[in-house]
Image (cartoon, rainbow, N blue to C red; front, side):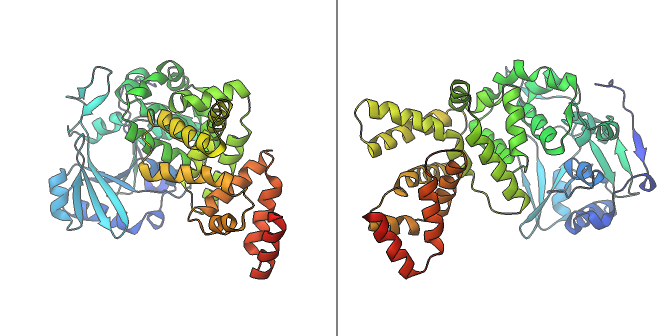
Length: 408
């Protein structure tokens, strides 16, 4: 940390690149309505950071000195949410502009582990800045004069491409262990380096993630998957010991087999899909990560005398049960994961009825893509993957001939 003194650097409009033309119109409407009602209003966080880096923000968050109830009175399309900290959500169709009141710096309610349980304390913009996670996320765009306000040295860290925790990293990680995940995800996304003090405690404190509610861990995993830098994030998570806490059975297999090929190819394909604005099914990535563990467990059941599909059913149940002890995978995604795995064996069958059933399966595309991924990484399924590639685009007459030829 560069010290605990408030720097209060103000960068005037003439000295930064943020233009209102690049700010979401709904966010501008919220900012101006708060300002016109006599309140302070700022853009804050990742949107300001990304705009300064000439990136396109995903979300636009607003912070103000108006209390949540005062915000609600200004907007008919507002709903208050949250128990740990009250937030106002302003709805514009499917888009939500989140409005937070400046947070104060005292009266936190902590668990024995140090995690914050309740935090409904309001304060000033200075206090709010020092409460944020990272310096580059503690930059404020003032709608009154279009300046940038920086209390923590975020502008300098942005220029130097550094991710730095605000305050004492050990204390901040104990308050909220998810900050370790966010630090690595942010470094991967921006191709930034971690400040030494920010990086050094992570390996030691990785086990604190076990105290985070499993449902919240799922939300963080989804952010990782959809980040557009899932491969680089995976590498950082492994290097700093967090992946072993999130996916212990996967880590055990990686250590034993020393083969990351499937995961590297899977995340490479994922990042390409995100870059191309294509859809992404989280179940596919869970299926990919857990596939080697499933294969190993199936082999054990088969060595004990179980046939293929009974061993598959037993292994799926056990592998998913072990994983959900660390990450609460919603039931609908667990069903999808199982279907993707089952399709890996259904797609190998030569029975004509099974072939057509597989093609009509709601998750056929995910199962087929997973088969292609396995072929890409050297599994001996290339021939059947090529067959399914041709079968999908063939006309009915050609399909009939292909099925007959295969079922001989």
